[in-house]
Image (tube, rainbow, N blue to C red; front, side):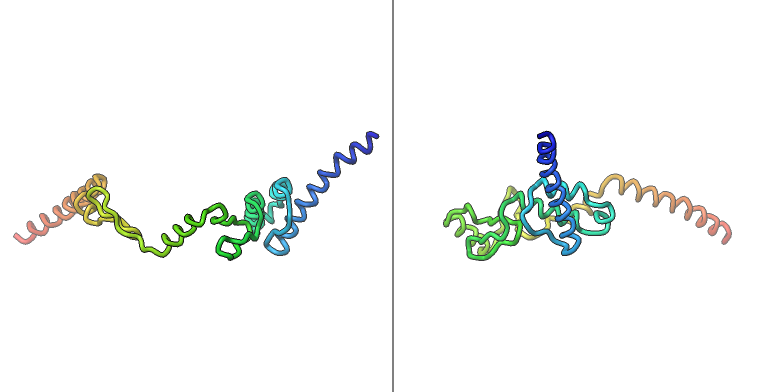
Amino acid sequence: MLLVASLTALAPATAWANAGQDIIRQCLATDSVSGHYTQQDYQYALSHLPSDVAEYSDCQDVIRRAELAAAGGKTGLTGANGTTVGAGTRDPYATASRSERAAVVAAQRNRPVAVQIGSSLVEPGTIAVRPSSFIHDPPTPLLVALASVLLAAAALGGGRVLRFVRSRR
């Protein structure tokens, strides 16, 4: 009886290890993971991934993506507009109402408009960099560095100019 109990306890662990090894083999052979595996299978595969495989292949990332895809739900879902959503992703329109879908389509078609916020006009797609602010308000450390360079140049150059003037007399 004890032998049967110990063999039954080892069977799931062996199956778990085999599934994890299958994931690693499949990743090495095809650079992808497909099939129905449990989260424990993915965890086993990631924790038992040989160091050279982890370092010199994309298997660690491929297995993580497959693990996340499996945790996220079914793969190959059909989208609201009839298109197939890629493996491992969810349909963003799955829980959207008809009016919400129409609002998304309208927002995609309409061009964004500029909005006045306080005294500033914010335009989508533009970068709010004002080069004039850097010229009018340079940072203090930059001013100190420039002043130091100018003083050093004046000290070195001033001595030469003085010697030149004295030699011409």
